[in-house]
Amino acid sequence: MATYDFDIGIIGGGAAGLTVAAGAARLRARTLLIEKEPHLGGDCLHYGCVPSKTLIHTAHVRHQLRRAADYGLPEVAAAPVDFRKVRERIRSVIAEIQRHDSVERFCGLGAQVEFGAPEFADEHSVRLDGATRSARYWVIATGSSPAAPELPALHKVSYLTNREIFSLERLPATMIILGAGPIAMEMAQAFQRLGTRVRVLQRSGQVLSREDKDMADTVMAALQNEGVTIHLHTRVIDAEEQNGSKWITVLDQEGRQETHSAEAILVAQGRSANTAGLGLERIGVAVRPAGIIVDSRLRTSHRHIFAPGDVNGAFQFTHAAGYEGGVVIANTVFRVPRRADYTLLPWCTYTDPELASIGLNEKRAKEAGIAYSVWTEEFRDNDRALAEGRPAGKIKMLLSDKEKVIGVQIAGPRAGDLLAEWVAVLGGGVKLSTLAGAVHPYPTLAEINKRLAGTFMSGKLFSARVKKGLQFFFQLKGPVDNPCSPLKP
Image 1 (cartoon, rainbow, N blue to C red):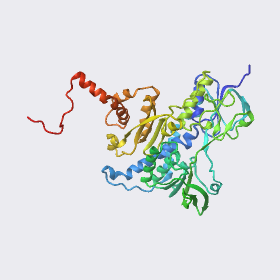
Image 2: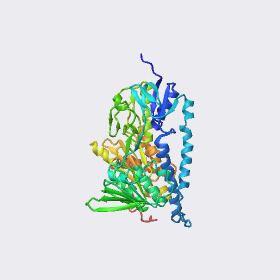
Image 3: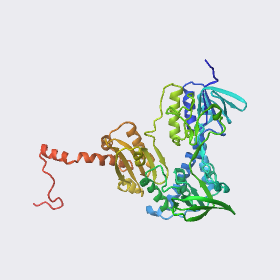
């Protein structure tokens, strides 16, 4: 039997890698964790989720200050934003969270942590700084990076990605954002609220193209109402930079040519898996353009090498990476053949209003040929949303032909938090009647969940058959003939 230095070796100290490292080490597997960057935490901590949500909240506070009069308060004069102070707050939040992803913590759990750029020497070992490390199992969790612009002309201009956007020296007066996915839409609204004039250029006819159009349009309308300019069906054909200004030439849907200029360009047109330099071709690990090819157990073309997280290109969310890390732990340490199941994987875009989703939406249901019915409730009918001055949006539920919930989407205030109840309902197999009968505190946004379930159940409770049966068995007198007329003495 072959002997190895470690039971499990992990390349990449982001969400997936840290999940595997923590679990394996605590279960007393001899664990090696290798990270290329100077710090653990991955893209989410340093360039993604944490800095973006910190920036979004800062922009939200400024937006609320500017809306003081809408709440009956004296108007507030919002001074220009000093982005250096915003940047420092972002860095302080990262530093606070970094403590949970520190080398000391993982060493304390029993994992060996090393830094550098490893390369596979063979199927069970890597070379790192001139030394060789071998392991029974290997986990490639190297994540992803911003995709390079497809148009060669864009390489003629300097541009930003999520790796630079949070470290700016000053707030740009104007910004063009290429793409209209979650990162693009979040940053468009945040920078507009901070004082930048933002223009979004989108190739397709919809923002947030993964989502249903009616839900995505709710987000788009909110951004447009705040001053963000959004161009759909727009194809970039040229770019140039002169005297600090960037110029982007585009064609619209009718073939008309336009040129837009801005101080800064943010490229947010997808992600690319980090596979370069690992020597995967040497050991025969199959890679496609989207990332490393894995099976349902997250195994690569070698059964002892796993690839969870962004690097496999399936679902590029931090919580998905953490979930997949747990699947790897089951398959390696416990030797249980666990498969990844994304049926109930939730996600959220943190615009205002937020857009959160779990299960199937109408797009995916149609693609799968699944029959469904749609049930909705509007936030304008929710008392808490009205009290907070945030009535835009709705919740949408999809039921199968057997009246089973197959998906829920929420476009509205704190949609990501509201979705948590549906995560529990769908994951726990809770009946809609149970949710409809649950007592929620009043007034809360979460009442919209109960109301949606109640709307569906009321059709059954107040059906003609039920009413007729009650009248027959209990001799009910029936409705009042003229209910608005005063009673006669």
